[in-house]
Picture 1: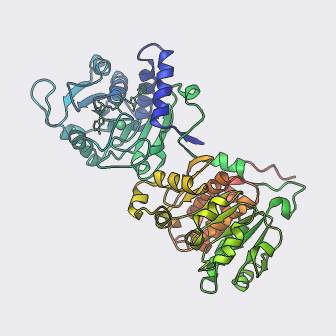
Picture 2: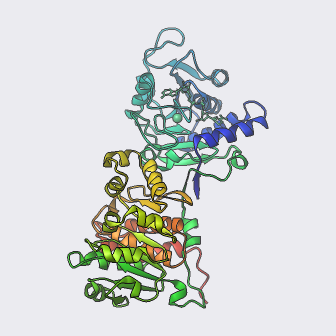
Picture 3: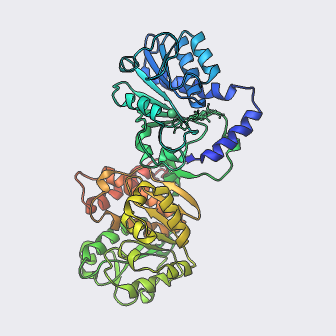
Length: 490
Ligand SMILES: NC(=O)C1=CN([C@@H]2O[C@H](COP(=O)(O)OP(=O)(O)OC[C@H]3O[C@@H](n4cnc5c(N)ncnc54)[C@H](O)[C@@H]3O)[C@@H](O)[C@H]2O)[C@@H](O)CC1
Ligand SMILES: [K+]
């Protein structure tokens, strides 16, 4: 699990830890990890040219101390200071003592005549972005923007210190110009912005340096991203005593005379979610049976359809409010997607006692919240949290980085793929998550495991993929995920 903590939590943990350490130790730990990562990217440190972009706070201090370490190993290190009158003194002294050069950012003078910075940056083998870290507020200031823009033109790899300068550490919002890094070396804990769009794209490959904060971070992470091993552990595995009811029966209420395909796709996702049986209730039974003969089908109200341990309702439902309301009255977990999100009323959602999962895309979330769609897209974390708060449900907000928020926390899905942005893949996802709910996973786990497996299927499906290909590729995704954890065949 990649676990991200808010700036406030990280700051508090740093204070606690610093009280127990000699002065400067924490920054040295950070700088050592940063220097090691830089050496790794350079391949050969001796004789390489490293440029440090140094802001006025401790983020710049990290860069200077790491630069001093690289200079001692034979790198030619130049620090470009954003504001020479405000710079981390200890870091600057360390760099000078190690033989590093110091230069001023455009428009300022450090010592002697001003030297143009651009050619120095252009010749670098590695650029280290220490302009601003978790102390950054709002978009970069104009002088910092100028420095960040220099980075846009360099061909050398760029390493951001703690965070790409210009992104919001807590929300992942990018209010203006920000540094686009090839790698980000972050200290103590991931920050939510490193996992969230749009900032995630600026961060490149992530590396976490342990500086000893762990014991002081508490147990309230701001966001978590599942990794392969977590999903492997959570996926249901039938045991020797399993029967279809123990594995779970998932009910699907989806599709209509107009959209029979939505029923087929939702069922195809549900069949690949590990449940013991899929029960379809609605007007597209013939289409469903033609494609998936193993489905149990019935007409009439869902509440009369026989045993169901979780429902997936809404994809292609049209205006069938009666079936939706019947499902919402059931005392079992319910996933609501697409038309179901449009038809469900907030009162009915809040009245539910069993878990509810909502799976809107940005447009549907905007309609539910009464926000502009563009606002949801720019503030995805705020949007998903607010919707979860208002509805009391677990909310999965679809996107290139799908987010899940609910009473159990916030999850960020790391397996997203642009190939999933095609008609019908949401139907597959709604069936898949319904199936995981029927199998007994809690709402947050079912939604985030579903998003993870679905994302993997999007990557494994033949390209360009249609939703049916993605549904088919779910099998391969499961195989990859279970490989390490399946007991050996006897
Ligand atoms: N506090 C600690 O114990 C540790 C901190 N570390 C580093 O310290 C960083 C935090 O240091 P600081 O609190 O000094 O904060 P930063 O260095 O992140 O930023 C603060 C500085 O940036 C300026 N600034 C703020 N907003 C700006 C903007 N929008 N545009 C341009 N400049 C802006 C401020 O005037 C201030 O001088 C972390 O990100 C990390 O890199 C690490 O050394 C690990 C230990
Ligand atoms: K930075």
